[in-house]
Image (cartoon, rainbow, N blue to C red; front, side, top):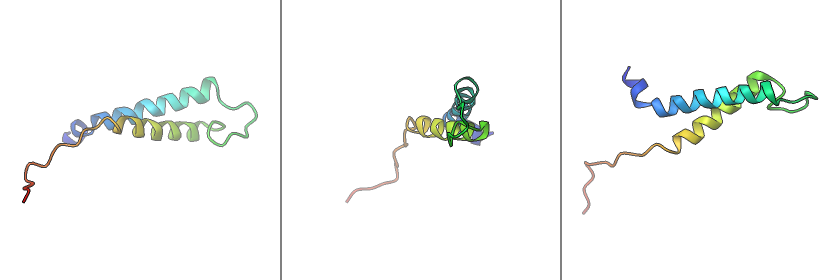
Length: 71
């Protein structure tokens, strides 16, 4: 459960991106079937999940290391 709380923003980004990727395939897609990403729902969903992960992890803030000493 602590994993879900710790990575909630990342998981939300993956889910939102996957949903967006599938919706893009469903409503816009590729009519000719030659598009490598949008011609199949699996490709489009995975690509969307990856883009959502990249976008939402860019908002994560690193916590400063309090044990670091300067000399």
